[in-house]
Amino acid sequence: MAQIFISAGHGGFENGVLDSGSKVDGVTEAQEMIRIRDLIVPELRSRGFQVLSVPDDLSLQQSISWINARNRSGDIALEIHVGAFQNTNVRGATAYYIASNEARKSHAELLLLALLRRVPQLPSRGAKPDTAAGMGRLAFCRQAAPPSILMELGYLTNERDRNLLLSRRRDFALGLADGLASWSRAITGSAPPTTPPTAVQQFPTVNITVNGGQYDEKGIIVNSNSYLPIDLAERLGVDIANNEDIRRVRYGNVVYIKTVDLREFNISIGWDAASRTVQLKTQSALGICPGLIDQIMGHGNASELSLMVFLKNNNEQALRDFPDLHKIYRQEGVIEGVNYDIAFCQMCVETTFLRFGGDVKASQNNFAGIGALGGDAAGAAFPSARIGVRAQIQHLKAYASKEPLVQELVDPRFRFVSRGSAVLVDQLSGRWAADPNYGKKIMAMVRRLYESAKLL
Image (tube, rainbow, N blue to C red; front, side, top):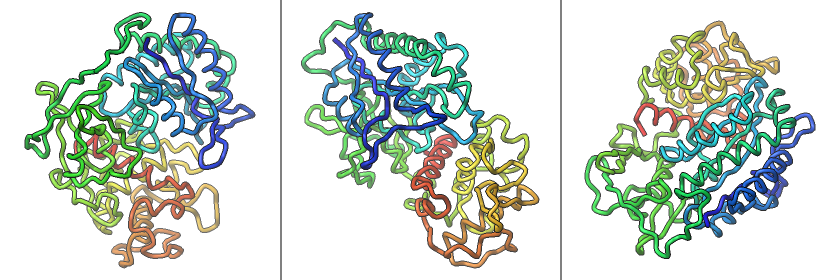
Protein backbone atom coordinates (compact mmCIF):
# COMPACT_ATOMS: atom_id res chain seq x y z
CA MET A 1 0.00 0.00 0.00
CA ALA A 2 1.27 3.48 -0.88
CA GLN A 3 2.10 5.72 2.07
CA ILE A 4 1.53 9.36 2.94
CA PHE A 5 4.31 11.06 4.93
CA ILE A 6 3.45 14.17 6.98
CA SER A 7 6.03 16.40 8.67
CA ALA A 8 5.19 19.25 11.05
CA GLY A 9 8.37 20.98 9.89
CA HIS A 10 9.89 22.00 13.22
CA GLY A 11 10.71 20.61 16.65
CA GLY A 12 14.13 19.04 16.16
CA PHE A 13 17.61 20.46 16.65
CA GLU A 14 19.16 22.60 13.90
CA ASN A 15 22.87 23.36 14.43
CA GLY A 16 22.55 22.32 18.08
CA VAL A 17 19.59 24.62 18.80
CA LEU A 18 16.02 23.46 19.34
CA ASP A 19 13.96 24.70 16.37
CA SER A 20 10.50 25.83 17.47
CA GLY A 21 9.86 27.90 14.33
CA SER A 22 8.20 31.30 14.50
CA LYS A 23 6.65 32.57 17.73
CA VAL A 24 4.11 35.42 17.85
CA ASP A 25 2.00 36.51 20.84
CA GLY A 26 2.65 33.23 22.62
CA VAL A 27 1.74 31.08 19.59
CA THR A 28 4.57 28.79 18.49
CA GLU A 29 4.77 27.46 14.94
CA ALA A 30 6.06 24.01 15.89
CA GLN A 31 3.28 23.41 18.43
CA GLU A 32 0.52 24.53 16.06
CA MET A 33 1.78 22.44 13.15
CA ILE A 34 2.09 19.37 15.36
CA ARG A 35 -1.50 19.84 16.55
CA ILE A 36 -2.82 20.11 13.00
CA ARG A 37 -0.67 17.18 11.84
CA ASP A 38 -2.01 15.07 14.71
CA LEU A 39 -5.54 15.71 13.45
CA ILE A 40 -4.69 14.89 9.82
CA VAL A 41 -3.15 11.48 10.58
CA PRO A 42 -6.18 9.77 12.23
CA GLU A 43 -8.51 11.36 9.67
CA LEU A 44 -6.63 9.83 6.75
CA ARG A 45 -6.25 6.49 8.51
CA SER A 46 -10.02 6.40 9.03
CA ARG A 47 -10.34 6.72 5.25
CA GLY A 48 -8.10 3.68 4.67
CA PHE A 49 -4.80 5.40 3.89
CA GLN A 50 -1.47 4.38 5.37
CA VAL A 51 0.00 7.49 6.99
CA LEU A 52 3.43 7.95 8.56
CA SER A 53 4.06 10.87 10.90
CA VAL A 54 7.65 12.12 10.79
CA PRO A 55 9.09 12.23 14.35
CA ASP A 56 9.15 15.77 15.74
CA ASP A 57 12.63 15.58 17.28
CA LEU A 58 14.41 15.27 13.92
CA SER A 59 16.26 18.02 12.07
CA LEU A 60 15.33 18.85 8.49
CA GLN A 61 18.00 16.58 7.03
CA GLN A 62 17.16 13.82 9.49
CA SER A 63 13.47 14.10 8.56
CA ILE A 64 14.29 13.79 4.86
CA SER A 65 16.53 10.77 5.55
CA TRP A 66 13.77 9.20 7.67
CA ILE A 67 11.30 9.56 4.81
CA ASN A 68 13.73 8.33 2.16
CA ALA A 69 14.56 5.23 4.18
CA ARG A 70 10.87 4.25 4.18
CA ASN A 71 9.90 5.42 0.70
CA ARG A 72 8.04 3.06 -1.63
CA SER A 73 6.54 3.42 -5.07
CA GLY A 74 3.43 5.61 -5.03
CA ASP A 75 4.27 7.44 -1.77
CA ILE A 76 3.84 11.20 -1.29
CA ALA A 77 5.16 13.62 1.35
CA LEU A 78 3.86 16.89 2.81
CA GLU A 79 5.52 19.31 5.22
CA ILE A 80 3.45 22.06 6.85
CA HIS A 81 4.61 25.46 8.11
CA VAL A 82 3.26 28.90 8.93
CA GLY A 83 5.14 31.99 7.86
CA ALA A 84 6.23 35.16 9.63
CA PHE A 85 6.93 38.51 8.01
CA GLN A 86 7.74 42.04 9.11
CA ASN A 87 4.74 43.34 7.15
CA THR A 88 1.81 42.15 9.28
CA ASN A 89 -0.61 42.66 6.38
CA VAL A 90 0.91 39.72 4.48
CA ARG A 91 -1.31 36.66 4.80
CA GLY A 92 -2.54 33.54 3.04
CA ALA A 93 -1.57 29.97 2.18
CA THR A 94 1.16 28.94 -0.25
CA ALA A 95 2.05 25.52 -1.66
CA TYR A 96 5.66 25.16 -2.80
CA TYR A 97 6.66 22.53 -5.36
CA ILE A 98 9.97 21.70 -7.01
CA ALA A 99 10.61 24.14 -9.86
CA SER A 100 10.00 23.15 -13.49
CA ASN A 101 7.66 20.29 -12.61
CA GLU A 102 4.17 20.81 -14.02
CA ALA A 103 2.84 17.61 -12.48
CA ARG A 104 3.93 18.73 -9.03
CA LYS A 105 2.46 22.17 -9.66
CA SER A 106 -0.92 20.58 -10.33
CA HIS A 107 -0.59 18.55 -7.10
CA ALA A 108 0.19 21.75 -5.15
CA GLU A 109 -2.87 23.44 -6.65
CA LEU A 110 -4.93 20.39 -5.68
CA LEU A 111 -3.82 20.70 -2.05
CA LEU A 112 -4.51 24.43 -1.94
CA LEU A 113 -7.98 24.04 -3.43
CA ALA A 114 -8.91 21.36 -0.91
CA LEU A 115 -7.70 23.50 1.99
CA LEU A 116 -9.55 26.61 0.84
CA ARG A 117 -12.79 24.68 0.42
CA ARG A 118 -12.68 23.95 4.14
CA VAL A 119 -11.29 27.36 5.15
CA PRO A 120 -12.59 29.83 2.53
CA GLN A 121 -11.66 32.81 4.74
CA LEU A 122 -7.97 32.03 4.13
CA PRO A 123 -6.54 33.80 1.05
CA SER A 124 -4.50 31.81 -1.42
CA ARG A 125 -1.02 33.00 -2.36
CA GLY A 126 -0.92 30.30 -5.00
CA ALA A 127 1.18 27.30 -5.92
CA LYS A 128 4.76 28.48 -6.35
CA PRO A 129 8.03 26.86 -7.43
CA ASP A 130 10.55 26.46 -4.64
CA THR A 131 12.77 28.97 -6.44
CA ALA A 132 10.28 31.63 -5.29
CA ALA A 133 11.07 30.86 -1.65
CA GLY A 134 13.48 33.11 0.23
CA MET A 135 16.49 30.83 -0.20
CA GLY A 136 15.68 29.97 -3.80
CA ARG A 137 15.34 26.24 -3.08
CA LEU A 138 13.60 24.05 -0.52
CA ALA A 139 15.39 20.90 0.60
CA PHE A 140 12.13 19.13 1.43
CA CYS A 141 10.86 19.58 -2.14
CA ARG A 142 14.16 18.58 -3.73
CA GLN A 143 15.73 15.93 -1.52
CA ALA A 144 12.74 13.88 -0.36
CA ALA A 145 12.52 10.74 -2.49
CA PRO A 146 8.71 10.64 -2.92
CA PRO A 147 6.83 13.49 -4.64
CA SER A 148 6.85 16.24 -2.00
CA ILE A 149 5.22 19.61 -1.32
CA LEU A 150 5.83 22.18 1.40
CA MET A 151 2.80 24.22 2.47
CA GLU A 152 2.63 27.46 4.43
CA LEU A 153 -0.81 27.57 6.04
CA GLY A 154 -0.78 31.32 6.61
CA TYR A 155 1.24 33.85 8.61
CA LEU A 156 1.49 33.96 12.39
CA THR A 157 2.35 37.65 12.10
CA ASN A 158 -1.08 38.35 10.60
CA GLU A 159 -3.81 38.50 13.23
CA ARG A 160 -6.54 37.12 10.96
CA ASP A 161 -4.44 34.16 9.84
CA ARG A 162 -3.36 33.48 13.41
CA ASN A 163 -6.95 33.52 14.66
CA LEU A 164 -8.03 31.18 11.87
CA LEU A 165 -5.30 28.70 12.80
CA LEU A 166 -6.31 28.74 16.45
CA SER A 167 -10.08 28.64 15.96
CA ARG A 168 -10.39 26.44 12.84
CA ARG A 169 -7.69 23.89 13.50
CA ARG A 170 -9.88 20.93 12.60
CA ASP A 171 -11.02 22.56 9.35
CA PHE A 172 -7.38 23.06 8.36
CA ALA A 173 -6.74 19.38 9.10
CA LEU A 174 -9.78 18.20 7.13
CA GLY A 175 -8.86 20.36 4.15
CA LEU A 176 -5.33 19.01 4.10
CA ALA A 177 -6.62 15.45 4.52
CA ASP A 178 -8.95 15.96 1.54
CA GLY A 179 -6.08 17.27 -0.55
CA LEU A 180 -3.68 14.50 0.44
CA ALA A 181 -6.29 11.85 -0.34
CA SER A 182 -6.86 13.34 -3.80
CA TRP A 183 -3.13 13.68 -4.42
CA SER A 184 -2.45 10.08 -3.38
CA ARG A 185 -5.16 8.84 -5.73
CA ALA A 186 -3.73 10.95 -8.55
CA ILE A 187 -0.32 9.35 -8.03
CA THR A 188 -1.47 5.74 -7.67
CA GLY A 189 -4.67 5.74 -9.71
CA SER A 190 -6.62 4.01 -6.93
CA ALA A 191 -8.77 4.95 -3.95
CA PRO A 192 -7.21 4.19 -1.55
CA PRO A 193 -4.10 2.57 -3.08
CA THR A 194 -3.77 -1.17 -2.55
CA THR A 195 -1.52 -2.36 -5.39
CA PRO A 196 1.96 -3.34 -4.14
CA PRO A 197 4.96 -1.89 -5.98
CA THR A 198 6.57 -4.00 -8.67
CA ALA A 199 9.87 -5.65 -7.89
CA VAL A 200 11.75 -3.82 -10.65
CA GLN A 201 10.45 -0.41 -11.66
CA GLN A 202 10.94 0.79 -15.22
CA PHE A 203 11.46 4.54 -15.73
CA PRO A 204 10.67 6.27 -19.03
CA THR A 205 13.63 7.87 -20.82
CA VAL A 206 14.13 11.39 -22.19
CA ASN A 207 16.51 12.90 -24.72
CA ILE A 208 19.17 15.46 -23.74
CA THR A 209 20.66 18.38 -25.67
CA VAL A 210 23.58 20.55 -24.50
CA ASN A 211 23.91 23.99 -26.09
CA GLY A 212 21.78 22.76 -28.97
CA GLY A 213 23.72 19.56 -29.63
CA GLN A 214 22.37 16.06 -28.98
CA TYR A 215 23.90 14.24 -26.00
CA ASP A 216 24.62 10.53 -26.52
CA GLU A 217 23.09 9.24 -23.27
CA LYS A 218 19.48 9.58 -22.18
CA GLY A 219 17.90 10.78 -18.98
CA ILE A 220 15.02 9.24 -17.03
CA ILE A 221 11.78 10.41 -15.44
CA VAL A 222 11.30 9.59 -11.74
CA ASN A 223 8.21 10.84 -9.89
CA SER A 224 7.57 13.33 -12.74
CA ASN A 225 11.09 14.80 -12.34
CA SER A 226 13.79 14.44 -14.98
CA TYR A 227 17.15 12.99 -13.97
CA LEU A 228 20.40 13.13 -15.95
CA PRO A 229 23.52 10.91 -15.87
CA ILE A 230 25.94 12.24 -13.26
CA ASP A 231 28.80 12.11 -15.79
CA LEU A 232 27.09 14.88 -17.76
CA ALA A 233 27.35 17.24 -14.78
CA GLU A 234 31.10 16.68 -14.67
CA ARG A 235 31.37 17.42 -18.41
CA LEU A 236 29.56 20.71 -17.77
CA GLY A 237 32.17 21.61 -15.16
CA VAL A 238 29.85 21.07 -12.20
CA ASP A 239 31.58 19.53 -9.19
CA ILE A 240 28.98 17.68 -7.15
CA ALA A 241 31.09 14.78 -5.89
CA ASN A 242 30.79 15.79 -2.22
CA ASN A 243 27.55 17.80 -2.44
CA GLU A 244 25.03 16.06 -0.21
CA ASP A 245 22.22 18.39 -1.30
CA ILE A 246 22.13 16.87 -4.80
CA ARG A 247 19.49 14.15 -5.08
CA ARG A 248 20.85 10.96 -6.70
CA VAL A 249 19.24 7.73 -7.88
CA ARG A 250 20.85 4.57 -9.24
CA TYR A 251 19.13 2.89 -12.15
CA GLY A 252 20.52 0.35 -14.62
CA ASN A 253 23.96 0.64 -12.99
CA VAL A 254 24.08 4.35 -13.79
CA VAL A 255 23.89 7.16 -11.20
CA TYR A 256 21.50 9.98 -12.12
CA ILE A 257 21.00 13.42 -10.59
CA LYS A 258 17.87 15.57 -10.51
CA THR A 259 18.03 17.98 -13.45
CA VAL A 260 16.63 20.99 -11.61
CA ASP A 261 19.57 20.93 -9.18
CA LEU A 262 21.87 22.04 -12.01
CA ARG A 263 20.24 25.47 -11.87
CA GLU A 264 22.20 26.06 -8.67
CA PHE A 265 25.31 25.97 -10.87
CA ASN A 266 23.87 28.44 -13.40
CA ILE A 267 22.92 25.89 -16.03
CA SER A 268 19.81 26.80 -18.03
CA ILE A 269 17.18 24.05 -18.14
CA GLY A 270 14.45 23.80 -20.75
CA TRP A 271 11.96 21.14 -21.80
CA ASP A 272 10.57 20.32 -25.24
CA ALA A 273 7.45 18.24 -24.68
CA ALA A 274 7.01 17.24 -28.34
CA SER A 275 10.39 15.50 -28.54
CA ARG A 276 10.63 14.69 -24.81
CA THR A 277 13.97 16.48 -24.58
CA VAL A 278 15.72 18.16 -21.66
CA GLN A 279 17.53 21.21 -23.04
CA LEU A 280 20.65 22.37 -21.20
CA LYS A 281 22.62 25.53 -21.86
CA THR A 282 25.79 26.70 -20.15
CA GLN A 283 26.52 30.29 -19.13
CA SER A 284 28.76 30.90 -22.13
CA ALA A 285 26.04 29.76 -24.52
CA LEU A 286 23.63 32.15 -22.83
CA GLY A 287 26.00 35.08 -23.17
CA ILE A 288 26.76 35.12 -19.43
CA CYS A 289 30.46 35.18 -18.61
CA PRO A 290 31.26 31.98 -16.67
CA GLY A 291 32.25 32.56 -13.05
CA LEU A 292 31.03 36.18 -13.02
CA ILE A 293 27.37 35.73 -12.15
CA ASP A 294 27.92 36.55 -8.47
CA GLN A 295 30.57 39.27 -8.90
CA ILE A 296 29.21 42.67 -7.89
CA MET A 297 31.40 44.60 -10.31
CA GLY A 298 30.51 43.78 -13.90
CA HIS A 299 27.80 44.01 -16.52
CA GLY A 300 24.19 42.96 -16.08
CA ASN A 301 22.61 40.49 -18.51
CA ALA A 302 18.88 41.25 -18.29
CA SER A 303 17.25 43.78 -20.59
CA GLU A 304 15.23 46.72 -19.25
CA LEU A 305 12.09 44.94 -20.46
CA SER A 306 13.05 41.77 -18.57
CA LEU A 307 13.57 43.78 -15.37
CA MET A 308 10.22 45.50 -15.78
CA VAL A 309 8.31 42.27 -16.50
CA PHE A 310 9.96 40.49 -13.57
CA LEU A 311 8.99 43.28 -11.19
CA LYS A 312 5.44 43.53 -12.47
CA ASN A 313 4.90 39.76 -12.39
CA ASN A 314 5.79 39.73 -8.70
CA ASN A 315 3.92 42.91 -7.74
CA GLU A 316 1.32 44.31 -10.12
CA GLN A 317 1.39 47.67 -8.32
CA ALA A 318 5.20 48.02 -8.35
CA LEU A 319 5.37 50.31 -11.38
CA ARG A 320 2.66 52.64 -10.14
CA ASP A 321 5.00 54.62 -7.87
CA PHE A 322 8.27 53.80 -9.64
CA PRO A 323 7.51 53.49 -13.38
CA ASP A 324 11.12 53.98 -14.55
CA LEU A 325 12.99 52.08 -11.86
CA HIS A 326 14.07 49.27 -14.21
CA LYS A 327 15.67 51.84 -16.54
CA ILE A 328 17.34 53.71 -13.68
CA TYR A 329 19.01 50.56 -12.31
CA ARG A 330 20.47 49.71 -15.69
CA GLN A 331 21.70 53.25 -16.33
CA GLU A 332 23.20 53.83 -12.88
CA GLY A 333 24.82 50.40 -12.77
CA VAL A 334 26.50 50.84 -16.15
CA ILE A 335 27.92 54.24 -15.13
CA GLU A 336 29.70 52.85 -12.05
CA GLY A 337 30.48 49.41 -13.47
CA VAL A 338 28.21 47.61 -10.98
CA ASN A 339 26.19 44.59 -12.11
CA TYR A 340 22.73 46.11 -12.29
CA ASP A 341 21.06 42.66 -12.19
CA ILE A 342 22.50 42.16 -8.71
CA ALA A 343 21.55 45.67 -7.54
CA PHE A 344 18.02 45.26 -8.91
CA CYS A 345 17.58 41.87 -7.24
CA GLN A 346 18.92 43.26 -3.96
CA MET A 347 16.13 45.83 -4.16
CA CYS A 348 13.59 43.04 -4.73
CA VAL A 349 14.83 41.24 -1.61
CA GLU A 350 15.01 44.35 0.59
CA THR A 351 11.61 45.82 -0.38
CA THR A 352 9.73 42.61 -1.25
CA PHE A 353 9.27 43.82 -4.82
CA LEU A 354 8.58 47.43 -3.74
CA ARG A 355 5.92 46.47 -1.20
CA PHE A 356 8.12 47.83 1.61
CA GLY A 357 6.03 47.31 4.78
CA GLY A 358 8.86 47.53 7.35
CA ASP A 359 10.59 50.54 8.89
CA VAL A 360 11.57 51.94 5.47
CA LYS A 361 8.75 53.68 3.56
CA ALA A 362 8.39 54.03 -0.20
CA SER A 363 8.63 57.82 0.13
CA GLN A 364 12.25 57.50 1.33
CA ASN A 365 13.46 56.18 -2.06
CA ASN A 366 15.75 53.89 -0.05
CA PHE A 367 15.69 50.59 -1.94
CA ALA A 368 18.39 48.69 -0.06
CA GLY A 369 18.01 49.55 3.62
CA ILE A 370 20.91 52.02 3.73
CA GLY A 371 21.15 53.42 7.25
CA ALA A 372 20.99 57.06 8.22
CA LEU A 373 24.00 58.78 9.77
CA GLY A 374 21.94 59.69 12.80
CA GLY A 375 20.99 56.11 13.49
CA ASP A 376 17.34 56.53 12.54
CA ALA A 377 15.74 53.07 12.49
CA ALA A 378 13.97 53.94 9.24
CA GLY A 379 17.30 54.58 7.52
CA ALA A 380 18.35 57.22 5.02
CA ALA A 381 15.98 59.13 2.74
CA PHE A 382 16.73 60.37 -0.78
CA PRO A 383 15.07 63.14 -2.83
CA SER A 384 14.26 60.94 -5.84
CA ALA A 385 14.21 57.33 -6.99
CA ARG A 386 17.29 57.95 -9.15
CA ILE A 387 19.33 59.33 -6.25
CA GLY A 388 18.21 56.42 -4.08
CA VAL A 389 19.35 53.90 -6.69
CA ARG A 390 22.60 55.84 -7.17
CA ALA A 391 23.31 55.64 -3.44
CA GLN A 392 22.73 51.87 -3.49
CA ILE A 393 24.99 51.43 -6.53
CA GLN A 394 27.69 53.52 -4.85
CA HIS A 395 27.39 51.51 -1.64
CA LEU A 396 27.79 48.27 -3.60
CA LYS A 397 30.84 49.71 -5.35
CA ALA A 398 32.30 50.68 -1.98
CA TYR A 399 32.17 47.05 -0.91
CA ALA A 400 33.20 45.48 -4.21
CA SER A 401 35.90 47.81 -5.57
CA LYS A 402 38.65 50.26 -4.65
CA GLU A 403 38.09 52.31 -7.80
CA PRO A 404 36.90 55.92 -7.38
CA LEU A 405 33.28 56.88 -8.03
CA VAL A 406 32.33 58.26 -11.43
CA GLN A 407 29.49 60.43 -10.15
CA GLU A 408 29.22 62.79 -7.21
CA LEU A 409 28.91 60.98 -3.87
CA VAL A 410 25.33 60.61 -2.56
CA ASP A 411 25.73 57.48 -0.38
CA PRO A 412 25.76 58.74 3.25
CA ARG A 413 27.65 55.66 4.48
CA PHE A 414 30.19 55.27 1.69
CA ARG A 415 33.14 56.33 3.84
CA PHE A 416 32.33 53.79 6.55
CA VAL A 417 32.82 50.81 4.23
CA SER A 418 36.08 48.88 4.07
CA ARG A 419 36.73 49.23 0.33
CA GLY A 420 36.93 45.96 -1.58
CA SER A 421 35.81 43.81 1.35
CA ALA A 422 32.91 42.14 -0.51
CA VAL A 423 33.74 41.35 -4.13
CA LEU A 424 31.13 38.57 -4.30
CA VAL A 425 27.45 38.78 -3.40
CA ASP A 426 27.70 36.18 -0.64
CA GLN A 427 30.31 38.34 1.09
CA LEU A 428 27.61 40.95 1.75
CA SER A 429 26.18 38.57 4.37
CA GLY A 430 27.01 39.90 7.82
CA ARG A 431 28.24 43.16 6.30
CA TRP A 432 25.37 44.84 4.46
CA ALA A 433 22.86 42.88 6.55
CA ALA A 434 23.16 40.75 9.69
CA ASP A 435 21.35 37.86 8.00
CA PRO A 436 23.96 35.12 7.35
CA ASN A 437 21.93 34.07 4.29
CA TYR A 438 21.59 37.58 2.88
CA GLY A 439 23.85 36.96 -0.11
CA LYS A 440 22.23 33.62 -0.89
CA LYS A 441 18.80 35.28 -0.96
CA ILE A 442 20.02 37.87 -3.44
CA MET A 443 21.55 35.20 -5.69
CA ALA A 444 18.35 33.17 -5.50
CA MET A 445 16.54 36.28 -6.73
CA VAL A 446 19.08 36.72 -9.55
CA ARG A 447 18.39 33.17 -10.70
CA ARG A 448 14.63 33.84 -10.61
CA LEU A 449 15.21 36.93 -12.75
CA TYR A 450 17.31 34.97 -15.24
CA GLU A 451 14.71 32.21 -15.43
CA SER A 452 12.02 34.82 -16.09
CA ALA A 453 14.20 36.40 -18.80
CA LYS A 454 14.99 32.96 -20.32
CA LEU A 455 18.66 33.41 -19.43
CA LEU A 456 18.61 30.34 -17.17
